[in-house]
Image 1 (cartoon, one colour):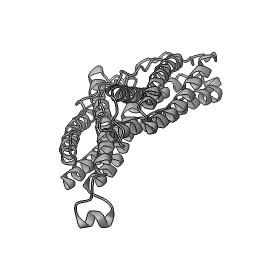
Image 2 (cartoon, helix red, strand yellow):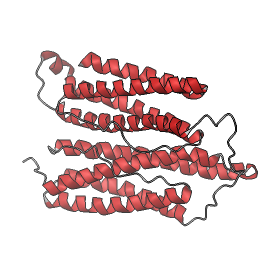
Image 3 (cartoon, rainbow, N blue to C red):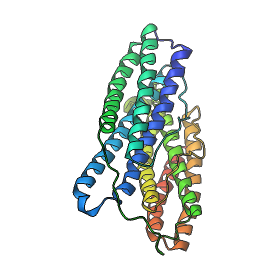
Image 4 (spheres, helix red, strand yellow):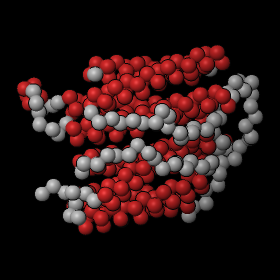
Length: 325
């Protein structure tokens, strides 16, 4: 007999989605921000301090990857149970230094463990052993994250010192308006990642339907399964874009801001996905052309070349979605 999830279980699963979205972005942006902290390291301690901070940056990146995997697993389970995964995220807390990173991470993991204990209890109550076992494994990994943050919180990590940043002529071109424009790109990439990840999992569920055409039977694939694979490929590329853009913002002295826009929209069918994703790519292409033009005007050739490269990817994504529509 198929499991009939309670409304309470589906609600908690979506709370898990919102939390996993939060921490995956939170840890990734903290990882990107680590580059700015590293630039403040005193030269006489560059080996020691650099090793310490680079190690912490690597830990945050690995955690972000693990949280993205949790996100995908929970979304997949929601769709399997007949629910609808949310696109809304709890608000990430980034912070200004390593102490902030560790404290915010510890708090987030504590909240996760509390929620996931409830999920396991509710799942076991209705005999949903698959969900319970999945969350027991996620719980184990979140507990490891908690202990990692706890370990670093007990260590006296002195913030690196260095000369105060005095803006020179070469960096005075990076105004608040310029950073606002670059952060629109961050917002677009985060929105796309959430949208495509959600659609990937939903398409996986749609792919389980009975094959309707001879070629589908022969190849053991249908349109939904093909699009699911395509979306996974695309959202991984968007993750690369997010990393490139965020690191550039921090390198230039700005702050990467979490504010997804346009808001992710999922759709109900594979054709909905393709139509909505073409629209998302179209928005990104127009925005990134604007950024290239502004970077050219300012003489910021590095940012210009970076966005020209990203534009090539987005243009390819647009036409890939168009091919299947």
